[in-house]
Image (cartoon, rainbow, N blue to C red; front, side, top):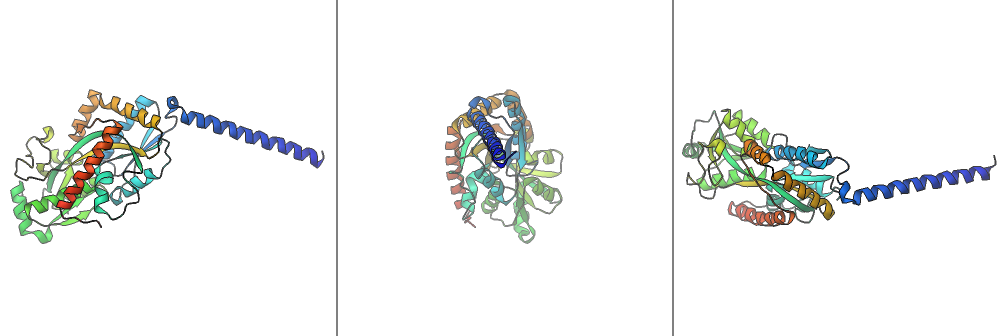
Length: 334
């Protein structure tokens, strides 16, 4: 066989391989762009907080329901730390193909931009809202070792022991709620940031922290088991599962009202048909009475049902709300 014959054969093989790759590329592109085929591979739900946090619990519930509805695997990945920067930036930089989504709260998309001079992501331009899931409230908790049993006693203790008082947080809403409580009551304590909310509760139980304003989802089991003491809830009305705990309004703490949402977003530029498919699926899931019951049981939260447009408007108003609260608390960007 001469060199010319060999080269001709190699050329034929090369073109055949190129055509094969082109065929698969066209087929994959057609599959990706076909609304009826999404999702045809696993979808990652990125959570900015650790396992056991309110956002994590909600994300795992929704992931399982979406698996059932859409017939694809939905994987929850916890990327905790840096006030949600890590998770939010990861999703902001991900391909806009619907296979990397963010399940998050006010921390990444409402408060961070007013607490930090710069962010590695743009909470508005880098994301497309899909829909809300729940709206949740917070509870003021203290260590069992602390000799107080109500808010008045806590205020007096803080005034007499400011040099050894501390509070912690794993998300900025908890930070702002704690700071707001101190300002409203004219007391002082050292603030300590944590990577995630469950770690905060662990140190509160251990007596390393004086108090924590924690999302009810994370705190509920510990309160009911008697591992920490609950002194007040930030909801407009009493929480059914903590019916003996007064609201901040009942206690005269006007302005001490913390709440947050958990919602789902996609990278900016994600095709509309994918956003609509995810939104419609989420709306169907949240219309299930069993889901409402599960959210009440695990999180003492109300469902936050919204279309992409409604969620986008909610986020806009939430940013304004937190901007005003942060300014009133006297906090400046770091």
